[in-house]
Image 1: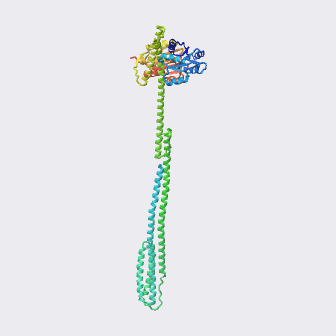
Image 2: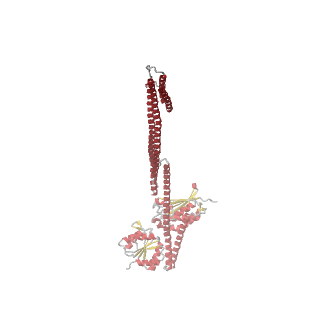
Image 3: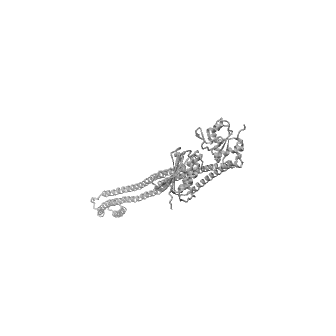
Amino acid sequence: MILIVEDNEENAAFLKIFVERKGGWPCAICTQGDRIVELCQSGAVRLVIMDIQLHNTFFKGNAVSGVALARHLKTDPSTAGIPILLATAHALKDEQTHFLAESLADGYITKPIEDLHDLLGEIQRLVPAR
Amino acid sequence: MKIWHKILLGFLGVFVLISLSGVPTETYYQRIIEAIRLSSEQDQIAMQMVDATEIHLLEMESCLWQYLASGDPANQKYFQDRRKHWQILSEQMADLLKADPHMILILKRADRAATTWIQQVEPLMGAPRNGQKTVIPRLDDVRVQYQQLRKEQSRRLTEGYEYSVNTVERSSNLTWFLRGLALAVGLFTCWLVVRSVKHPLERLISATARISDGHFDSTVPVSNDELGQLSQSFNAMSRTLKERTEALEEQRRLAVQANVLKTEFLANTSHELRTPLNTIMGYTQLILDKLARNPDEEKNYLSIIQQSSKHLLSLINDVLDISKIETGQMRLELDPILLKPLLDQVNEHLRLPASQKCLQLTIFQSAPDLWVQAHPGRLKQVLFNLLGNAIKFTPHGSVRLEARPDETRNRICFEIRDTGIGIPKDKQQLLFQKFVQVDGSLTRQIGGTGLGLALSKSLIELMGGEISLSSEGEGCGSSVVFSLPKGKIT
């Protein structure tokens, strides 16, 4: 399953539709921090597509950004193996470098996503073979 | 070469010249002493003349004796001859000594004594010898007079010479003393000049160096001479420099800050424009890849695309409006507007988003015929903005707009009150600033470019109104009050 962490409902919806129907990956949408960590720890998640600005996402009672959440997943040994793809509308090169380093994520896509087919390729590349 | 070295050198030059001037002066003094010596020779001649005169008298006495002894008439002639010479010498001596009344007096006394003696002895020279013992007047008294004259002359000679030489020497010594004094005074003056120039100059030099190192608060003590004036000007200059530098620094800081804010604004704007664009491109891709399962689903995608496009357009318009206001290009035509239909329209548009969040939206006016002087489109935009914000930031409860006249100020007041998340006190002032978004996730959670309030404030001000915001703090809701001039019904 691919976990889509994106609080803009419409954007999350088209991602899910495209990845499921075009790429054939089952997807889930979640914006609740604790639930996201739970799902990842359950072993069902094979990749996380993480938005950076999460508006109503709380983890252990505190508001968190996608970067902080990704960092948490990457530093927790039980979830560190799950590849994370950052997705955000922050387009500046500096910001991307900074966010990547900060989040320890594996890849980065800029919104608007110019070609969704490239996203499928990126998912293919990052998801480890079973 | 330093200035004080030059001053010192100049003074030394003057000293050398003064000292060198002693050489000719000393020569002149030597000449004066020589002249005195020469003039004293004349006096010595007078001295010799005294001797000669006395010798003539002695010879006259001797003639008398010989005559009395021998009766030789030759002696008579010789006596007369000596007497004539004595007369001449006596006159010459008087001429020589005429400048000195004292000497003349003594000379006359001697002359008188001699003349008396001659008158006493002269008859004896002519008288026949009668073998009688003749009493001859003695010459000793006369000689005493002449000795007196000689002594006096000798004294005068010594005294005069010594006096002249002493005077010249004293004069020479005085000159040397004055020269020494001039040297001392000169050195002292030189020291004073150097001291009064050197230290202020050194202080100015070091202060200038400090200023060039960026320490603009450097000042120098002010004395009351020309250097003091220079120091005063210097201090004034330093002050001006400090003020200007600070002003420039402040301007630079503001420019940098403005630039940072603008960059931030651009980055935020870019981010906000990309989000609806992402939706548009995403759903377009779904349609192109024929991923919709039925026509209704496809229609839904298209309607999402349309909504996002509208949102994108409104964002672009906001940015353009802000830009126009920023460059002073926005001019608004103000007309009297009846508020009721406008508020109805606002209500119409916002009822749906409010009800979607289960919020109670109330739009209330205290009288049915309120008129306001405004630009209808822009007033609507402001109300949409402020009410839209209130709805966005209120998770549950109510949003209320109240319009009421403020008779004392001849204005219409609009108050938008919500039961939303509120605004921290320290952020309240910040909210109206252009290009400033409340930092952190708060604004970004809700979306928008962070321009809404800044744009509303600018628009209200362009319509001659004012706006203020208050909130008891986070979680206490917030209240925005703005007022516009009353519309005049013509």
